[in-house]
Length: 73
Image 1 (cartoon, one colour):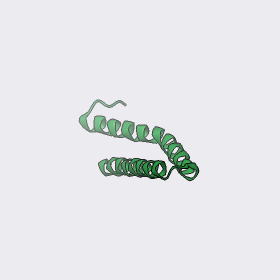
Image 2 (cartoon, rainbow, N blue to C red):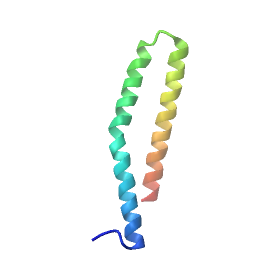
Image 3 (cartoon, rainbow, N blue to C red):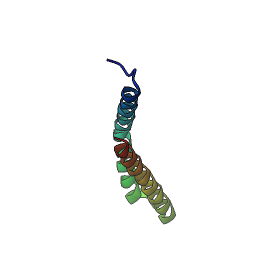
Image 4 (cartoon, rainbow, N blue to C red):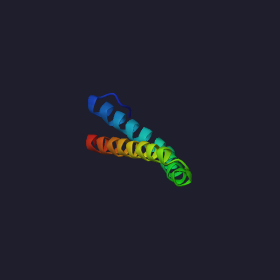
């Protein structure tokens, strides 16, 4: 049973996409956690604000990606 038909091919692509997202979940969680810990140790307020902004952007993109992948289902 392969991905020969159009519907089957779409299903296979969706499964591949979901798998790819799942493989990055731990990296995302680790990066987010490390960033949060780093925030409390930064001496420079400017650096902390910049890091917070970057973390917020990363989180927003991650949630947007997950929402889009769920909508495809």
